[in-house]
Amino acid sequence: MSSDPLLRQVLSGVDGSDERLNEIVSSLITHLHAFVSEVRPTEREWLAGLDFLTETGQRWCGPHRNEFILLSDMLGLTTAVDDVNHVGAAGMTPSSVQGPFHSPAPVRELGDWIATGPERERGTPAVVHGRVLGTDGTPVPGALVDVWQADDTGLYDSQDEQQDLGNLRALLTTGHDGGYWFRTIRPSSYPVPVDGTAGRLLKAIGRHPMRPAHVHVQVSAPGYRPLTTHVFLAGDPYLGSDAAYAVKPELVREPVRREAPDERWGMETPFEELEFDLRLVREEER
Ligand SMILES: [Fe+2]
Image (cartoon, rainbow, N blue to C red):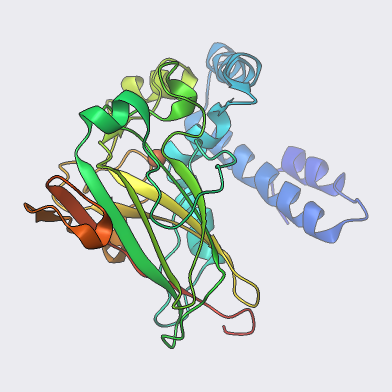
């Protein structure tokens, strides 16, 4: 128990019926009091902080945007929560943050183009493929693979009026061998949105807002723990300084440049091939 009478008094008022909630709130109160003791904010600074949070919720959160997720990502907190929850079993694909741009994807067939319109015409054609496997290498047929990515200029459909909703997204089902594949364009690195409070904070603390190029992947299959992760493209200049701290070495893959058309993948022009297997942990595995 704290020797600070005020903190002691506040903590003694935490006595709800939910023990876990009591634990969380007590710890939060303790850390915030320690923060105040250490930083000794002026009243003006404290109110500026509250105003910042108020604006974050009132102005920058809605059905298509959640600035609090962005703030959590940018402060490394989403990755910290991910790390304490997904201490991986040997051989599993590491998880990584979901990010703020996930939305329901159109159901597509294996091999479909997920890029449409001008993005497909402008971008570098690419084939992404891999297999969903257990940690022992057993193929997982019938797994749902949800993918989403930015276009060649770094924009998601929800940020860009020029793109149809559902562009560069897909919900795929793995085949009998656990395989999945789709045709797309190479995603670009991109800045996280900087027009809101998160961007203001980044600028104020002198950090760049860039995220290295990636494709988001979320996989679920009966009997396995769901996985949310990214595949990052090797060689990207921002791999070492991701604004969301989401890069893990095991998630970086080198796209292979293919100069000749390839009937197997239905590609009629040169393209890039990116292979990314996803290894899931069984529910009972630790
Ligand atoms: Fe992203």
